[in-house]
Image (tube, rainbow, N blue to C red):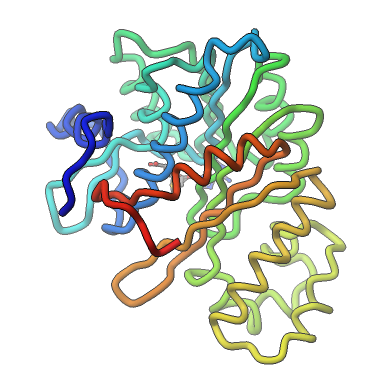
Length: 291
Ligand SMILES: C[S@@+](CC[C@H](N)C(=O)[O-])C[C@H]1O[C@@H](n2cnc3c(N)ncnc32)[C@H](O)[C@@H]1O
């Protein structure tokens, strides 16, 4: 393991949640640490650079559409990790507001209890419902004129393109989206999504996207061809339907290969500069050459 630079707060953030607080945790695979590390780096780099800047007098807002309980535990171990809402709450240069959505009531209660127990948590609002159904209310909770960072972290094909369009309409919202390619789309497209025009994939790509035309034109349906094509098609949809113009990605791998892809999208080139910096390290604090 490489030597971490002292400003890497990951070990410190993990320490904050290492003892059992008796609340629900989310049981995760080891690879989730890579995802959370990346997300935390993105939060730190962006808040450090942008909080207090005159061009954002209304500050930065944090949006998490699939918030979880606030603490994750790696399966088969005692290792506990701060979940995404806690990472946002601990940003050194604070968000003006934290906006969360979690469909499962007990999970939402655990998250709320944890945030309330922090002495310096920014103001937060938690919606307990399906984020696709609540997106109007969620969007209205965003402070006018704020720069927003949104994490969209579902376990499958659950974040509709329409939801993302509504969230970002008329606002500067940089996105980090988990696209479940290897764990869902690659396995299920041929059998379940292709024959059903109301499928989950249709909602994720947006109704009437015409994805089947591109799918049928692929030279082959090998997993790597499919995954690459999904990424390109998803970016096209984010560009054409939601007005995004700058994209980045990171493939998250498990023991047996790729699991899912993190898709970064911004409307402004500065967002992509931050993402490029995020990409330079992995969860061990080492330079990451696998991007
Ligand atoms: C992968 S977890 C999120 C993990 C979280 N980002 C973290 O760091 O711990 C996905 C969460 O979304 C919730 N969920 C699933 N479908 C949802 C929906 N349609 N709207 C809101 N929450 C949903 C699940 O109950 C689960 O807690």
